[in-house]
Image (spheres, rainbow, N blue to C red):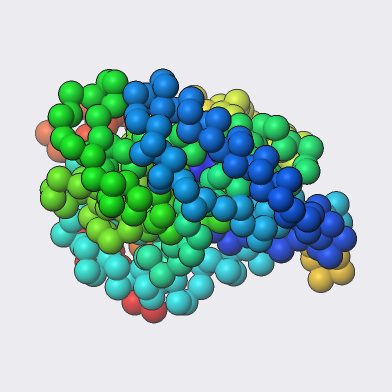
Length: 418
């Protein structure tokens, strides 16, 4: 959300979703299977206590309450294995990834989720401009609508990755990232339990039981929580109370999850009524390949890509479902090995909305899967230009940047049968 920011933002690689890790090869087991002796555990406890002391001092939270909450915190060796990068011989496989997520079970569950929540999905779409299909696709890919939310205690996950990350080249940066998330978890749980922070005007009393329950809730192997798999920092920044009960519950409340996903996408720049990506023209594949650098940055105009033969003219025309010629884009490459093991790739032109999905989980595979899952639910990957009143002059139509809500059919009608 990841990065994940949610799953999205703190995802561990550009090749996949954090909720579905790739198992490391046997040759890397030595990194994980280090002896968890008394010295190792003592070092873990010392570092954790130091962090708790810092949080207590800076946030004015009683240290005994923090120590009690983490009294039974422990390292999880299997977590250290799951975050290992793939081996040097591992080949990313877009076709296999897509098959894992764009498949009948998730799509059927997606239609059922939509039917159960169609009125609220329509309301959120109207309020935020984020299509219901996109919201449903994200939650489906993340957790199959709550079926796979993880079975690790979140405080153990974040403590393990903050103070016992495996010996990888990016160990220092990753440990700092998870230390920050551990701090965010503490602040999130403290406020949920009624605790007061320096920046808060709350005067409620702390509930030790609620504080402990929050710290002990289940998460993914990377510390992502609930139906939309938000990291603690994203919960604090983007999660909202969708059902109006005064609490944010991403584990049990579909409305909270729906509203939170939409809020995240809106806050990260989702453009209402605009497409996500365009497939590259066959004749422009070589030109696209030359521009593919793996950097998720809007750097080329659509007109430039039309001039290079990567896109056709209609994709630079709003009236044809495209975007404005001066809209920015970048090249998305989705590699896969063919049946002979040779490297191949599909190429797309990612637009602003593709980049927004990447902010949720930094993976091109993930973003394109969300787009295609949404299309399977009825999403039209094209611009939505309001129909002109024939009595108005031709130049009175609204521009691509207009944030007005497009007229769309009801959510129920957009769901396609299997």
